[in-house]
Length: 519
Image (cartoon, rainbow, N blue to C red; front, top):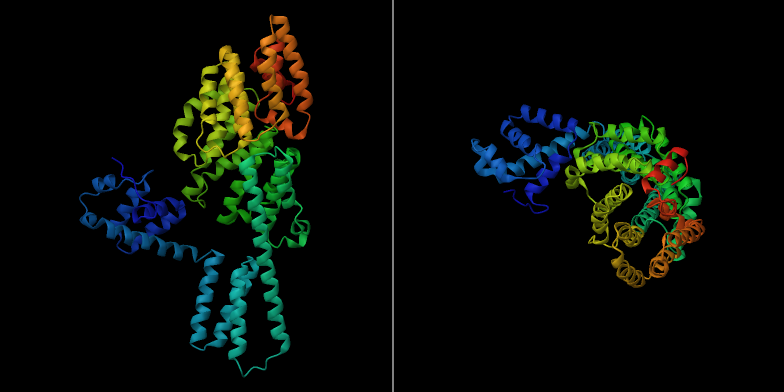
């Protein structure tokens, strides 16, 4: 049986550390082991490295002939420290932050030995590196050391200009640190508002995002002090447009951001991770707009390629297959290839579920699955996935989807012929909306249709006439920016046309896709 491990236990920490290593780091650590007579530790490293979930029983079984197995806890602690030391050594050669830390340690040692000329030499190296890579916190330490050298070297005449220069530089650095922190705060506020609500469904929530986008700090280009803040600027602008329903402008910002990542920038692992996020967000907004063109395909190929990049750790790369699956499924449902989407779902989703990290991802997938089965007329399977959304335990996530799921539920039961359930479903949905203080003109009109009009219909002609009236009403409502976002989840108008024209829903979707008509 697989032993459950406690978070932050030595076993858990070692397992997570090994899983976080990229292939180049792993090779470096193993070379160090071979040079330091670490064969036993290398065997333990290899066994843990192959595990998807930590399993101590399996480790003991595979290494039962090793002399160290009786002291496994001590050996694991040693291996952890060995890897951390090795990582320090590995990253000391190219990580600006690590190199700066080494320079500043050398500065402190030389200062204590009163070797001030040599100390100044390393301080200059550190300052040059910090300025190049915008390491502002390190710059404060460097300026403090420069001030200490001015105090110690009493044989050198102090000049007021030197003191003023340091003060000016320190003020500039503090301003940049403050600005970067402010950018970060605005970014996370926009991000979490977007994550929780999806889109603005009322003016109060729109006002929250308006306060962020109209913050004076965002309007002055001089506040973009480095690459990191420029990336956050693009992200905030895109979040705002997406949240308020201006997907076309959000798409433009996302596309610009992808183009901002140059070849040189992608040599740094930190920006590789951010590039991965930028690709992901671009593909999301493209899916909203149903832009499944060459730009979309190229971005998807770039995302796939990152899964083979040796500069990214396994921890960072492990969610890429989930993202690729999501965007391939979105593309199939977006262009009307629902059977291909179903094949993808039934063949790949089961193996990916252990890799799915967030509630939003599960809800997103369930929405794709519902749509695919609904479009192909498999209403039982559609209801199965829809109920996964409705009964999802964390109901504070993506409320826009959770509200619409109740409307989809009524429509799917109607298609399945469960007419006797419709009245109760409408009432329970009404209670749910009232309790959540949720009011949408579109959803109100759909509930009213199923509550009143369906009871008045006596024959096929009256039913078609009723659907025509509903289509006219909903078409008018969906012209409003906040209501039209509903079409990103389900094409109600095409569904109504299938009822009016007595054609299948999937037939109309495919026809519109071929004609280039937005669904």
